[in-house]
Length: 173
Image 1: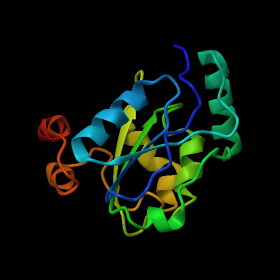
Image 2 (image 1 turned 45 degrees about the vertical axis):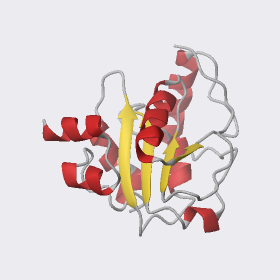
Image 3 (image 1 turned 30 degrees about the vertical axis):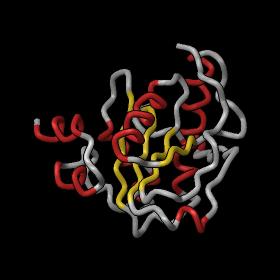
Image 4 (image 1 turned 90 degrees about the vertical axis):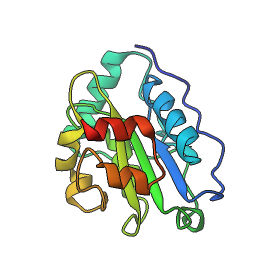
């Protein structure tokens, strides 16, 4: 695996009530985020660490494990203005599963805003671990993922947030 560029998306404007925030190192999460944004009309926001994770998977895996063990919260290279964030009702949150949970840079994003009145719908990429352990993460326990009561969103939550036929099909299985 090789990393994608470390550039953020263009600044969000708040012209939609849906935000698709994602962190992607290899590009898989970016592709999923683009699909979600196309289906929902959501605006894209890429969660980018101030210091890139590195160019090879071993370096990334080592850093991710260290951050997890130390409770590190990597700084973000870009932020959403709080007035713009307030305009979003629904937030799709995409991330890879690293060491069984979301990367700590995603926790930095989650701890940067008030999501208490938002519908949160997670989606994740993984080479083997499901999204279920993310519900046991620090961010989830601290309440920053309010509204993410089930790691796999159900049909009604998905419909309420604007669709995504493939996710509805998966929720029905």
